[in-house]
Image 1 (spheres, rainbow, N blue to C red):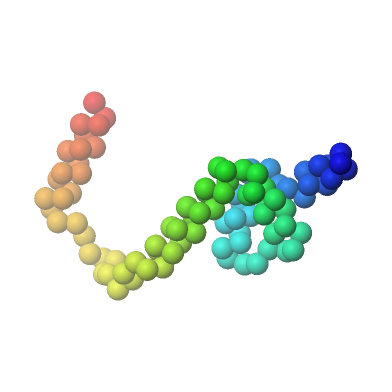
Image 2: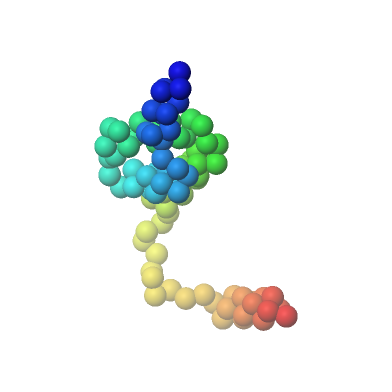
Length: 92
């Protein structure tokens, strides 16, 4: 039984590595060993599992955003002034 635990620990990345692997997995497939290790980690770590769900949601949301807006479009002067006032009061 002890050898099984050691084998699982050897496959499973730490949290920092698991976060990086989840981000990498969005862009390209992971190797089978990395994928298995990540799955083991996510089964045991609720925080990294939540992180993975969040980045998948953000990626999906970003893909559904309106990409036809004018990047040169600026905020109305009134909105800029409100933001400026809010920043000035937060400094104090």
